[in-house]
Length: 337
Image (tube, rainbow, N blue to C red; front, side, top):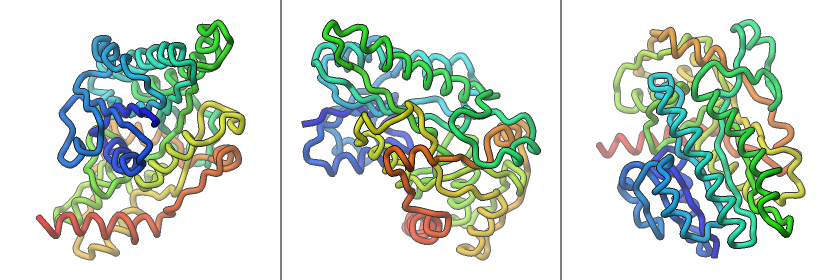
């Protein structure tokens, strides 16, 4: 039986991950979130803990479990982090450090490495200008790592922290030299879910556009029509986490991996939405701060190392994401309203 901890279980990724993990009979799931689990989620887990991931008392409570895997999804997202950078540091950095220390202690106690899956983000990139962004094209994991947001700074630091703890400190705490912590990170593009409406993210214009059109509401997009970043359908995000977790340690050549699927402009997303909802009213009212954040992120990612090391390949390109997943599912949700 695999004991799995999912933090931030109420979030977009957490919701979809719990649904997938709960179908595996050999898995015991512990869910942590600041709020009570949403409708339909509580019955998917064996234990639910309500609390702040950065609270030492909450971590101490979780440490009583012999956890095998941690999916650390809890975070304050990009736009929310800009509004409250001190809280962002507390949740995103201190919360991660507390869980890494907990995982190391559990691994030392049980004698087996705790896998620590960490969702990072394209917010770790910092392009100096739109011209530089367009010229860079698809970036690798080690280019342009000068984030301009608190969220990006938090995430790139935690990538380094997890690698340090896993590669050095984690081993040194076990007298036998056994590995007690196995940190693995994914740099997610903007994730689009058909079942949850996002809050607090700077890539939210894509899902917001679809949800508004499905409800017959006008939508003013907060970025320019030419704004371009990589995106991914939520099922592929969950698939990537599980595939990386399942990859043999000896196949992995680095701690942090880019993953990509499609990289449309806001205008190309709007065209897709309008093809499904001909009466959709989509306008553009760029928000200076949010536009500046999107401009600082890469236009696309090079995910060739993930494809080579653990066979990453998205199931959903842009056409399939919209035509088979997003539009039909979202339309069905609002047709019941």
